[in-house]
Image (tube, rainbow, N blue to C red; front, side, top):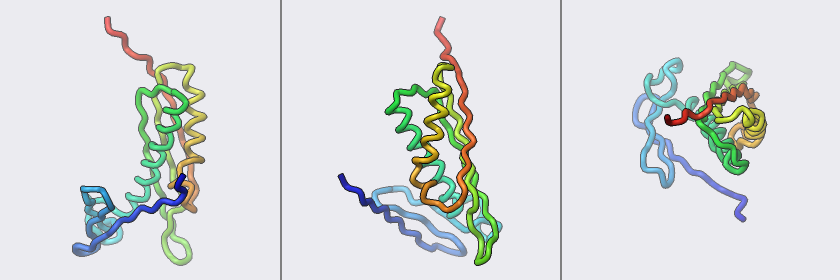
Length: 150
């Protein structure tokens, strides 16, 4: 089994403080800029958003894989992530990532298992594990029984 993987992206400057981001084997480039608070363009993705989105996306993929392997039936699953910047000696740095997953399961009996899998996903998400900032998990597991057709 291969244990080394590489992912290549190319950021191309277009104007001002922004450009487009491309990645191998991905058709759609993404327009980006520095954030408006750093004199960038508003309304487009920023490198800061990319980082926080990477944490959220990794968490979704990791938890979904764990739920599938453990046969946990999900009604819905959504993750909100917030990254906080702080000024330290030498510049700004992300000091904290808050991950707020919301899982909806069909049965109350699945609530505890879903919570255990969320905690396991927090420790297994490779993007979050790769960061030096504090990772805070604030999970919510809801139960919603399916509506039966009458």
